[in-house]
Length: 324
Ligand code: PBG
Image 1 (spheres, rainbow, N blue to C red):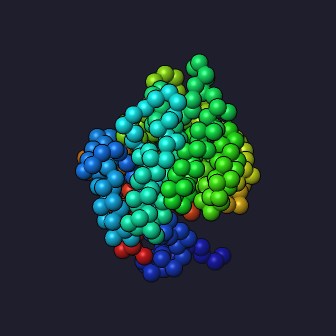
Image 2 (cartoon, rainbow, N blue to C red):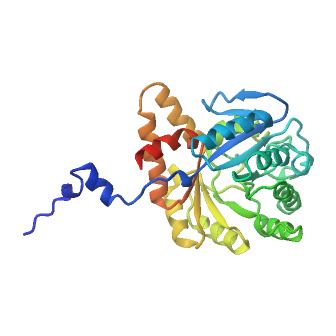
């Protein structure tokens, strides 16, 4: 009998690299940024060590240093000073995110700008859509999302990324942007977004925890995979250029399934809680931060995500570059 010795392909680093199937690239990563109003302001986010909310002037410096590390793309979240019940501050062309986009594109035209489109940080009650009683009104929310996306696109966003999980928002946004001559602005859809407790630290950062109830009537049940395929296929049909699965590590099966089910690039969001867990354990020196991060991101890519949104992007870039 021929001897099957698996170790022959594992014996040296050169052989291991020769047969390695998944290699992270600096091109894969997108860093999320939190933008706040005011001048020369920075606010630490206690549950996300190393991540700060920054005013636009400080943000430009942070982007410059990220670009010096090899960063090329960012996802932007606004922290508005004022919230209301109508979403007015989300759709205003002078709002925090359109202003940030204009400043970024003026200073770094080649930096890829992706803007998060959702109302939760702008509405007093913290839900992702406007209310009708205690019901989140899907169809009344669509025009607001379209106006928000159009304001971002007009300001120069390369992609808008709707994260609200209302039905039919992709086609609504696509048509609204096309009507305004913004057909070159792409859509990265948070298509498969689970109602997850891993978003906790993010909600601290932007103060968007819902005032009552939860997001289970519009975000997906984490016990389900069939509707993940329906959601992703529907968003591609409606015009999404890229579809995202979120969170990442607890949902590698969903990433793999979606990658088989659609013919557009798949992204995954390694979310705030996933970041905070690694940070907390590594600050206690219970795990090796760098190795755990590279292993996590490689696994997300191996599952089928070509694009990874992660708060570790800036830190991981030099590790990945050194590893190539
Ligand atoms: C807004 C939004 C959320 C995240 C991205 N966009 C929070 C939520 O749905 O509650 C989560 C990001 C993270 O946890 O890093 N709807």
